[in-house]
Length: 90
Image 1 (cartoon, helix red, strand yellow):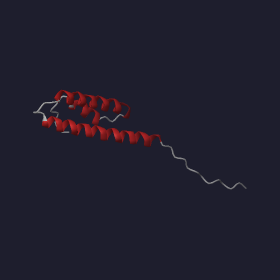
Image 2 (image 1 turned 135 degrees about the vertical axis):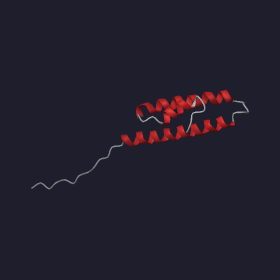
Image 3 (image 1 turned 90 degrees about the vertical axis):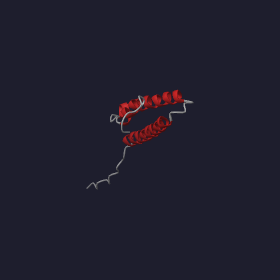
Image 4 (image 1 turned 120 degrees about the vertical axis):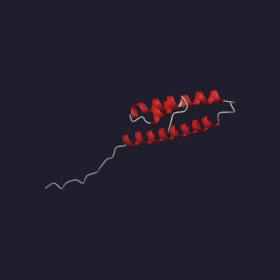
């Protein structure tokens, strides 16, 4: 995402650049809501092809980020158990 051409792109960019896992879900949800709202506003508009493509690209990017975040969250909660051989006691 280069330049911001549409107002709804600001929350999308903010979500995609968020480094704090605790804030990521909230930002992605806000960005998806902005996309949903704008898509509804454009319903039936014939002159919005470029924006519709941008909306779809942003939607796909946010969903990919959400999948990665879910995977990372799951991986961070996995614990490993290492079995150590028992020492011989004399």
